Length: 234
Image (cartoon, rainbow, N blue to C red; front, side):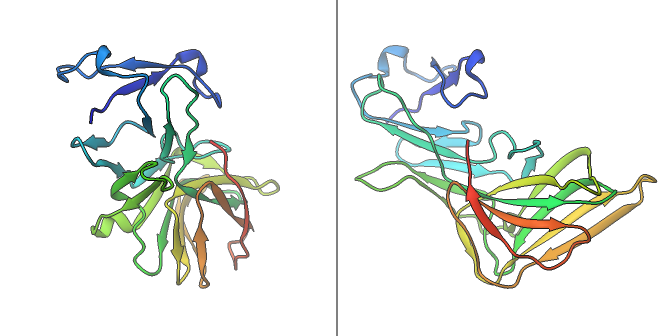
């Protein structure tokens, strides 16, 4: 098979639908004519971090995500799509779920790290499975590295908390069962730039489901957790 790169038109960026334009690799050995509109199309996002050997599609799930107000970071949630004909619309599906933290306080959050308590793999090497022989799309993480057992949300210069209204932090995660619960480390600074670390921990089973958000209660001070579930949009 061949791997083609498409880019979304600038005016459609950030929308739920868009027009894609073929962009060939330099020295890739084939031309635009090699893309056959009458053949099934499999699509994946994001393109960065993807490798293809002619058969298997592999991806490197980043261990760091970038804070985005009210959403998860760009490219943090891999997606897959399939169309029987390239001339038809292609609908992408989220392959990840997410955890949402709701934090209150006076400090400025600089990073949040999530880690399972039973060696769950959350980042690193992964394999894409698109619609093949009727199977649903999926992404399977395969890394054995210790560094792949956590994911961090990096908040740049920091996100200021509010004592009255909770600030949301959303971290995309691969579908998995945290059989022993999970740990969250929140790193922050106060107005004097003194660093603080808050540790949040659950002990019961928690399941990350594709395209769903697992929501933590509003926390201030950080205490015990009861989680609820909601829909996740692209």
